[in-house]
Length: 284
Image 1 (cartoon, rainbow, N blue to C red):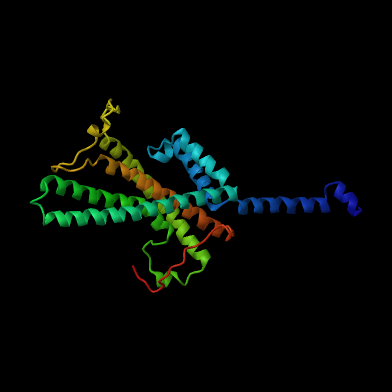
Image 2 (tube, rainbow, N blue to C red; image 1 turned 60 degrees about the vertical axis):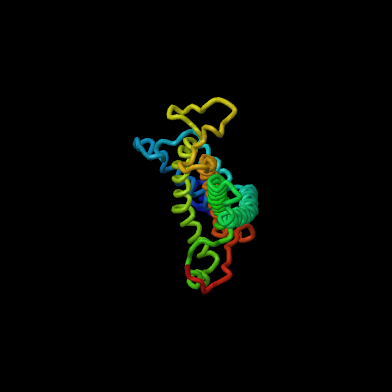
């Protein structure tokens, strides 16, 4: 039987069939490479959420709200759009840099207030010591706490995570990316999410929310904030509510790190970067 007749009868593949198979295989490979690793994580999480929901799990992964599902779907879609994902990363890092600037201002506030504390300690005959000492001390520790909360995101961006640098420095960029991506995705990100679920109700209570979920009415909202048990102290409601801001900024920067390291794993070194350490012999 002639070769072309066999091809017509379906007994032998034609050149067009071979080209089609290669094109299909190439398309699948291209799709796999085009999707950012974050998308594959979101896809796996979505599959696990479906299974846990059908199984009737009592955990969050089996009881997600509609916006949780929307967030998973949006993450999968964005993972195929490298420029958009990179723009999100740049915006997050700009926010972290702004937090660093505010943290520097707060560092000077802490210094000035503590200096005032020292001066008034030795000149309390001319000041109302009970009031000034209490308010100044409260302002100092609240400013210090806010400094940390606003600066922790930039700390992650700047690569100050505790690590053994003389061991880390010899790794290739891809191995560093694998380590950072795995630990940020499966350890640090879940911790931040868990922390936010704990501190959000705590912050609401500190700002005056009642047990039934309602808020006090009136314009003097500061009177509903949680107060310190010590005399002449500033309200502690706002600084406790700032925990939400701090963990949110931290979580966003963790997301930015996942995007950056994911780009390195996807072979897009032009969009990803691994922070190089300045002190390769440092052990923390």
